[in-house]
Length: 304
Figure (cartoon, rainbow, N blue to C red):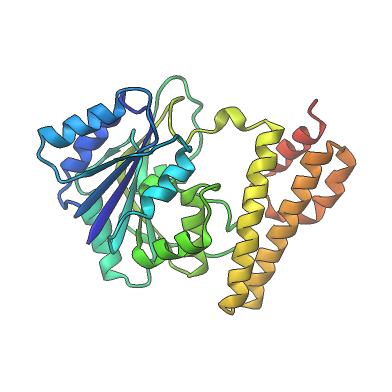
């Protein structure tokens, strides 16, 4: 059974194209769950009319209160029953072969817990272009992602994912609606050595100011980083408990412990607003994925 999860919020501008791209899949999902997070525009009406007009057996669920995109995805994932689950944003366009291609790979490779596909980025509204790994490589190869010291750094957005039910169950048991769903699923698949990339472009990934998961405006906000880093720390602490329960290798536990200390040092740096606290971060420079992220932390430490 194939499930597809679509989380919506004020997406009437783009959602019809996404709905059409789902309806036109060469392999149709057995279950489509669309959960709306109390949209204030016509999103729910547009979705409902589309379902009715096309005679689709899709399930539109309207939340009672607005809780944000993280909780919206968390709640929607908990509702699905599929053996293979796809995540979908409201403002992208899937190529007709996306579901069929990814299901074929997952079914023929039992070691895969989560598979991410390539994508083509399309930018609107003068949004800054960034280097995204999914935009490169389209040879159809399958690549395993190794567990390393940057295991918290995800390289592909959740809308490119499909994953097995066992990973969903783990996410609902150990995960949190306070942290991005795709980051947690990425980490859980990594620790199982089951994270793979399909180097094949299977969707258009739309980037614009109104994107549901956009956080660009918060990128230099101290309070945002304190909150986000505390959420990551809470997740790593759970991850560490899970590592002991499941007898992870000493090397892997060492990675996780080091990441925990790094996050604690960053929280101290942000909260103290004392540049001397950077000494607590220096032993963990290798935990930064890019040097500019360390420079950003220094800026936040001295920002008025």
